[in-house]
Length: 331
Ligand SMILES: *[C@@H]1O[C@H](CO)[C@@H](O)[C@H](O)[C@H]1NC(C)=O
Ligand SMILES: *[C@@H]1O[C@H](CO)[C@@H](O)[C@H](O)[C@H]1NC(C)=O
Ligand SMILES: *[C@@H]1O[C@H](CO)[C@@H](O)[C@H](O)[C@H]1NC(C)=O
Ligand SMILES: *[C@@H]1O[C@H](CO)[C@@H](O)[C@H](O)[C@H]1NC(C)=O
Ligand SMILES: *[C@@H]1O[C@H](CO)[C@@H](O)[C@H](O)[C@H]1NC(C)=O
Ligand SMILES: *[C@@H]1O[C@H](CO)[C@@H](O)[C@H](O)[C@H]1NC(C)=O
Image (cartoon, rainbow, N blue to C red; front, side, top):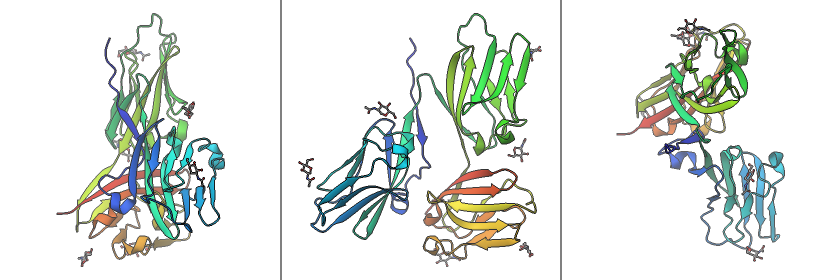
């Protein structure tokens, strides 16, 4: 029997080598426990410690009032029976983690705030394959056909939506590339012999779970689509918008990081261009150039503080987005 090679799918926007700037990065395997360390050896008598998931309070120790509270019913109960708070150190343990726990956690000790970024690695399902592709490239999701006597139908789903199928009996291939806002339009090819699916000219919108169904047997794939940008410290980096020209009612925003802080916006409706370069301690001050035709963003004179995950969001007709991961290298 062939030994299954298990890879891991990383479900977070991870920043390597940047722990100091973006908070401690903690990676845990789906289903395992993880402890976020307060780094306190012992709490003082009047300490107040609060743990937040994004902006929601999930646990609190109030030494003054001698009270320990775990709010595990919040957020649809995703933390129910999963939180353990160490009453000596204030450290928080999350047991049986799932991808729903991916986020930034804040630990507030009196007035001091510490950040943790939690990433959950999901182990691939039995037989699932992880496939990575650079944006713009083509990718074929291929898997040996199982030995099924009579293949009547081969179907492909993206996040539970049917996007393509071969109906053998009718000798027909149906590619439903208008679904999901047309993100697959003119991009899908189905091989009628092997049942493999090719996605051409991938964009970050194609990232996610794919399932091939043959009769009733399913095979799973996880597709990663990424745009990687690297720049030497001091140089400029341009994050190119896919738009060639903005329309009259377009609104676009550039956002950075887990907090999705807005750093620039073009609002064609109100004919306004705004660069918010004083956010985030002014790290972008006098460094942002926005192309008012395409919405592309250039960051000049970069420092390691500009490394991170950037998103271009477009609001009009239909919502679309494009993600970039920028690394800045020092000497
Ligand atoms: C702290 O935890 C220990 C063991 O988990 C327990 O015995 C003790 O009663 C707790 N103290 C308070 C104040 O909850
Ligand atoms: C872990 O969580 C899943 C649901 O996310 C649940 O089905 C499973 O029983 C849990 N396992 C343990 C050991 O609590
Ligand atoms: C399947 O492919 C073969 C060869 O490429 C072609 O002759 C046939 O018409 C195709 N069938 C369908 C349903 O497209
Ligand atoms: C790839 O897709 C982009 C939009 O996402 C489009 O502008 C470009 O023309 C496409 N390239 C090819 C070769 O189809
Ligand atoms: C767009 O940019 C060009 C050149 O950078 C400038 O001349 C023009 O005034 C700008 N338009 C708006 C609406 O800001
Ligand atoms: C680039 O930024 C550094 C600080 O990070 C500053 O000292 C330097 O003057 C800047 N250079 C230019 C050309 O703006």
